[in-house]
Image 1 (cartoon, rainbow, N blue to C red):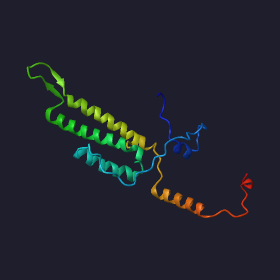
Image 2 (cartoon, rainbow, N blue to C red; image 1 turned 180 degrees about the horizontal axis):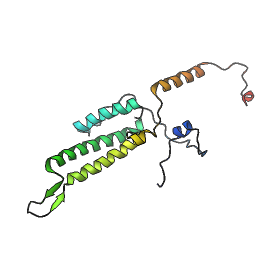
Image 3 (cartoon, helix red, strand yellow; image 1 turned 120 degrees about the horizontal axis):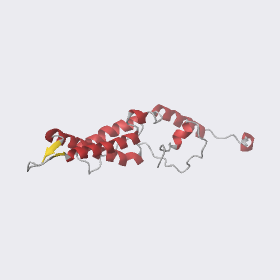
Image 4 (cartoon, helix red, strand yellow; image 1 turned 120 degrees about the vertical axis):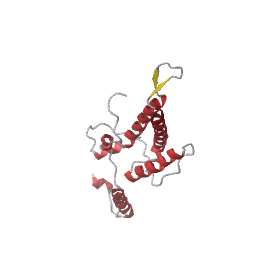
Length: 170
């Protein structure tokens, strides 16, 4: 898709819908994750450790939702691939030589490292984990969410007067 990525509806509303275009009324509304689920069983030890560490950080930042858990899983797998390939490159070097004295070639682990870094970067952009993408992410702090929850609970708790006429509101 050419052009910039579309902004979430919540961001457009927070900015006052500057483009005055119709808002997406069918955008999925994902619940924030407040307690990190156990790491998926297919993750090895290093990837599971990354799941716990990054999961806690994303929850603390208010960025982890139920719909973004698969992206966190992909990031953890890519992180493990990256670290494994990095360790292999540091042991064997970036350039390898064929056994029969032929030419030199680039270590295939370097390609794995590069592809894993690219996938990690894509996931980091989605989460706002890079400095440039973090500037574009707007999240409400837990204190703000509690304040709004209290406000809405108070409004819902107060019954309307018997003589309330909604036509007089216009």
